[in-house]
Length: 203
Ligand SMILES: [Zn+2]
Image 1 (cartoon, rainbow, N blue to C red):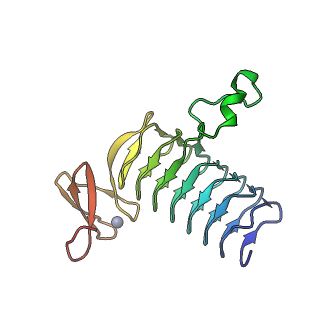
Image 2: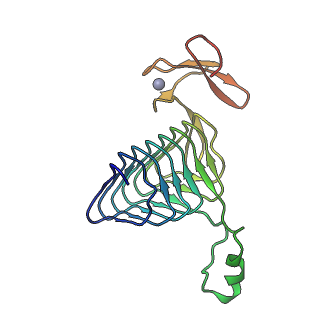
Image 3: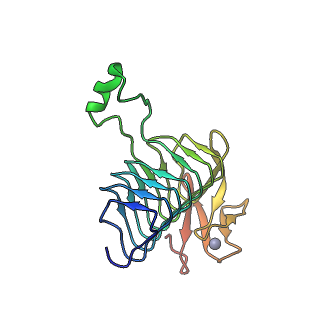
């Protein structure tokens, strides 16, 4: 792998890591895992076979990215997030349950959308989708899909507001909002919000 920075104490068994990605101390990346370009894989993070990590993703320390977890470009995973991929887990070594694991339908995929944030210590139950630019607050327990641009918090996590692409909250009681940080404009549409481009068309 060209131009990949791997700390001497990390164990990297995949050959599919893109340029300019950094893998920090004591991380372990299994064969079959895919990691894109320009990522940051924090210390003590485990990436399992079947995990797919896009480009420009930041994964802070102490994470486990299991098989079935897909993290899209530019997403941020805070420290010690708990992902899951099995709704009814049992030990494969338990004779009464072993036959369930001979099939592959136990695995429920999780998708973490482009540019989204999963806060420190959040728990994401299996089979959930976190939409683009959504934010999951620290410590939240995600039991339902999270729509794009939506902030969710609590246990279980519930919608609390909207977030801009840039990561700042959008404060508006009306149907339209403009980010005070970056100036991007949004309007309410359907069940959520959508971004307006500089010409006023939906984007
Ligand atoms: Zn903004």
